[in-house]
Amino acid sequence: MKPELTLLSVLTAVASGYMALSGSSNYILLVHVFIGTILIGSTAGVLNQYIERRYDALMKRTEHRPLPSGRIQPAEALLFGILLGVAGLFYLALFTNWAAVSLAMLTLVSYLAIYTPLKRKTPFATVIGGIPGALPPLIGWAIVQGSVSMEAWSLFFILFFWQMPHFLSLAWMYRNDYARAGYKLLTVLDPNYAITSRQILVYSIALIPASLMPMMVGLTGIHYFIGALMLSVGFLAISIRLYFIRTNFVARKLFYASLLFLPALFFLMML
Image (tube, rainbow, N blue to C red; front, side):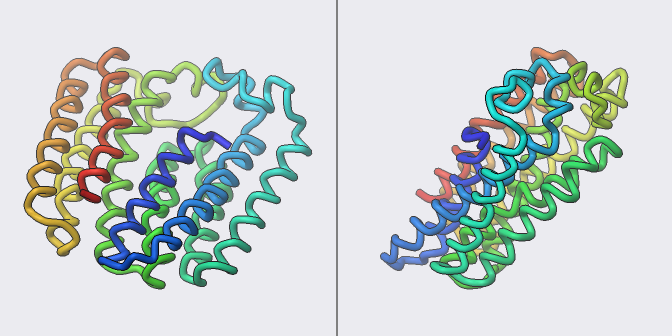
């Protein structure tokens, strides 16, 4: 179920739901956010591994996953993934609202039916994959509010722009793996990383106004603005270094910085 990646998405959804409460003490809604999004996120993780099981076997980073290593059979994974998806959608339909159900279905369809196959056809797939990856805050907000507002969209944009340097730095480190499996990622098609480093820099710059947007739409105050500015400028500094020093070492630093940046930003937002 890719628990690390799934829980990171669930964190953003729960944080979004918490801020959508707007002073309400109906914290049971956050339980629905947690359960619903963890089921949907796990569905995406399981079925993605089912679809890519042959390619995972060709990559050192993924060859020990349950399917390529033979610990789980494909039919078992497929059944488990379908059951998770049905359970997640039924749970959201039963305890939340149709706005959340629709967003959850959009997440699964765009991730599994569009993004996953496109990874082997075009480097633009990374941008397309940023859409389902940025939808969890919208789901969390919709569960609490019943609809999606500009405040929720501000969280969507943070995740969307954050994902690009996050994934591209990962693809940078495992470029040979992705090439061996036949993925048409930007790092595979960019021999000297010139385009990749420029893309990372552009998205890191865009992440600054995106990170400040919650205050601009009235979701947070000046203390968040100051903290978010410091975090996003610090993140940009590492991206600038990677632009000039194109090494795996700096790419790894950026990747780990991205893992710290997102929860830190959302925690600051909740405070």
